View 1 (cartoon, rainbow, N blue to C red):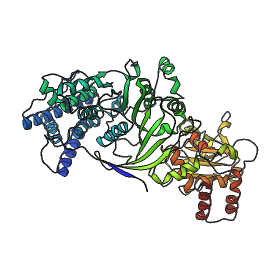
View 2: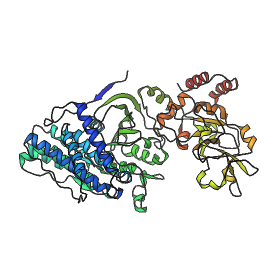
View 3: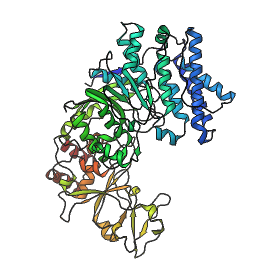
View 4: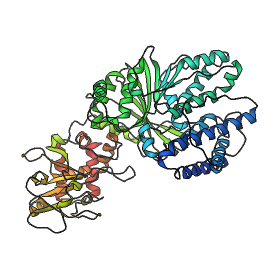
Length: 602
């Protein structure tokens, strides 16, 4: 039976007031919704500064409310940037309401609520560029627990968050250092925290948020010794920061993600982990390896795409060589874990200079910002070729399948097939679209031709889709004149199947002479003029089977179905498909065929 534990929220601050949790949640939700609505009335070019002013006003009210309740002063450094936006009285009242409501929470919860409010107020383009997606306490606490389980000693550990905006990791790390040193006086506690913690942040307001929350969280210690907290956050571009000694025992964080254009010098600098397009979180993973001391720990929240995507194959090899994985949590809740983000998320720890022994895998069911259920799902082993996709159980009952997949050597190439993307980018050929066929046109095969139940239906149902393409001189490369299996390139995590395939038969090709396949479809075609070892109908049946879909989900958590990942899918030996092809010829019912294919995997 799978082992299940819970990530429990930390107890509320002693300075919080006694109010029901539902009442607090309702008040916070209302205030944040009002703030979001207000921000949309501000011209986009002014919205970032408006967000600064709003969140600063909310934090000011939070501090004043705490001071009135406790009678103890709380000193927070002023932002190093000019706020510059004047709020009207109604908006100030919303900010004050939000700040007052946040005092009913623990400091970690308040930090998340107010910092993530800033994230939702800035323009989306700026938010994406600066990576302003802050981590909920449930995930931050789990990440710190994973680092602790790896042997980290909070009494001495030097900790770096290279994308620390909002304070999601540095604030609770400071609290853990403080707890570990509860036996010493406040001056020694503060000395340890200031010497052990460091943050980098490119967004100056995000950097101020982190520093401010550290000053709030440590205000009682600071009051006892009559001092101020040194700046623990450097406003800088982490990509340009070069490691210095001493290095860190723990590099932790939620790095930004998304494609980024690099200079020639940056590409050379990060070449060891790059293949094709550069993604920010891949670069930050490389950076973490540079800043972590030997035997130190890297603990990152990232998308899961690096486990299988072709663009990350060098990064996988680099991790296997320099910092193999220790543990991984697949986050079950895809929507609502991070504000406005729809990405499958992974929490993972790695040890610098560790051995490639495999990693414990857990299923993390996030029930709220504050709590999550952790269930052991099994283990995964880095493959002998670490550039290949890393197969990992997403849920507990995948472990048996993972064990079987690891011993299945056959791939599409062994069956006689290769994968390519449909060549037609239709909006580059708009003037060649035709409603009616003539001697110069050929059928366009759009993504909707592959139905959800795995049938091929020639149709052009969507707006702007036309059924035919005029193929002129020089466009012959667009034509497909051999039978193949078509696979949808984009699906959704919530769909019943990730793999949706259909056979485009030789008879359909023969009827039209050739077709043109649009680029939202993958084409699985014979790799040579020799007849493949397995027919296209049987290949489509395997891809549409429930067990192949489960296997593919162990390879890729992305909604995209790439040629690289299809070619990495483990398959039964070609000889084992004879029985499946016989069932197809006999027109056996789909359930029987699916069961026989499942038996070939398990």
